[in-house]
Length: 194
Image (cartoon, rainbow, N blue to C red; front, side, top):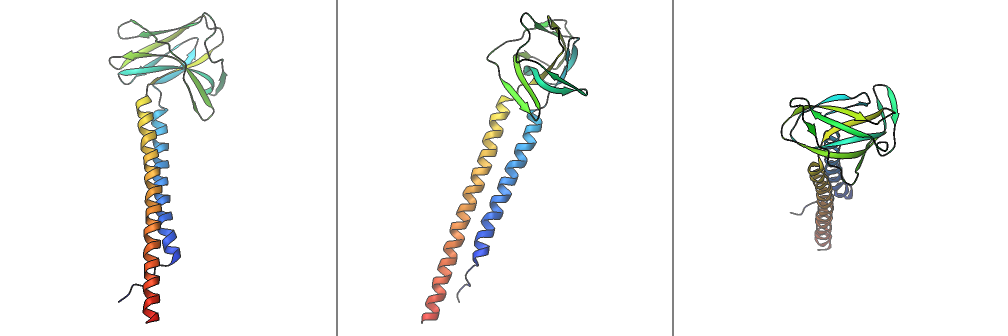
């Protein structure tokens, strides 16, 4: 009893579906992660200043939004605070000043919202933070967000891994199906020849 050869359409369709499902899952995972990675504890206008409820302990980044819309108004600023300007961060529960550690500037962009980092600070527990500015003439948008760099790397590895695995499985499936098809065709030819 011989098997009927698989059609070429089936040999191509099954790997295509595997590839499509895998890349779709990778894309969904990337979109889902990007919404979480873009999460901020809060943002506001300085001056006058605002308060932020920092929802988790750990490292946080202070961002200066160079181009953004906030509460129906467009804001644009340079990639730094004006010369001589400073931000004053205060833990409202203790009244202590929060030290901002500056480092090489990072940037982020979500749609039309662009921002550069002004520095980081560490929180031991969730708290309410007062954000004020000194020496800032034109209002700027400042935001505070939990640092998510480890999650970014984890997401990149996961999405890349899912995509690579999908491509590998699609190619492997294509090779196996075409091999089986070829063997079935050869068996059928031998049967007809005898």
